[in-house]
Length: 514
Image (cartoon, rainbow, N blue to C red; front, side, top):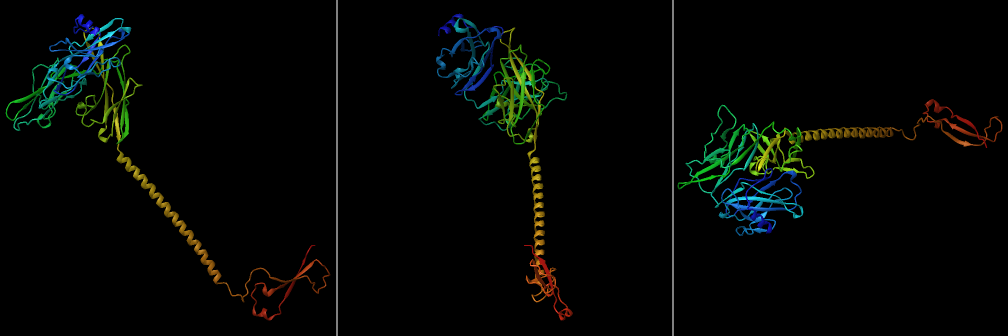
């Protein structure tokens, strides 16, 4: 509380020293009863010195300045009009964000909101620096309207791109069937665009000069009044959409965004010290999750306080594949694209596209926004936009792969079938040959003559082996054994003439050594 009294005694004014920045949106719209987040981020020179404590304050005002304190996070002080409705959602020390969330909005909350930071020296030995946003964020709270619209706060592009700035609306009442919905646009160099609204043509003129504006979709049929800007230049402009609907009983409803959309265009050849590297090509099978990396760097002498990464493809115009605002993501990629951040790789980001199909074949471009707080003027925020050379994503047709796999499986199956048939044929031939040999043997056995027939065996039959000596005069030898050979039993068939002769008996003498 003492510090707050000290600041009030100083007479707080929305003065921001050179080289110190406070980044806030110009305007936000919400309805009664809803919740809203008011983003805020601060930056200061690197040579400021060591920082001790960080004190956070929010102020409000009804005009162009914020003079009334409503929230002191450090000392846990909240204005009675916002009791239990304000909370800090930022990270003052890490990401240097001071964002707050206000719940259960009321009509009386329609004000300008400014964030303020006070940096103390280590050990609270004194004030290091303090500053706040010069313009803050204007919050417009309305009763829950039947007619509501949407426009993004900003759109990034590169010089020469053809881009779309969306304008969407919803209406809960009935629209007169015979009267059209009117969509008008205004452009200007400040947040409110001015009051010079015009109806964009439905097509470009024949000369196709840069910065031409045309309507994209019929607003009555599609509840959209987006515009296409052809070959944008580096002019920094704001574009404001106004929707007018005629009521059934007469009268009309009108909606317009308080501060429009800021178009931030980067030069392709500007800031050569900032680089982006992407792989030339990535190949993935259909149905898988594709990943594409993007590595970025900036000159060592620069200190961006904020870096945002986006991904785009070129269709009829450049469309976002990934954007922190889902409303800006092309319908084909909405809900399928994410960023994968690696805590160990502070200068690299990866896009992931889930369940890719052949329709995802395209070239994907990494777009990086560097925000810097430059010296030389008050709250001098500089935007540097760089784009990579693109990565060609090639999605392989799994139906062709499956077809090739089926063909290979079919070829293998046919080969195995042929081998089985050949094997069975060989086995059948072997069995047939074996049966043939058995059949021949059986025939041979069947053709064998009866026992009373003489069969030539080719060997003589010895009989009546005896040790008695013959009556010949060969001398006496006790080691001789005599055998008689019956020629009739030798296996030769005897002819009739042989049968009539006397049987002959041959004797063989075999010496037996003892």
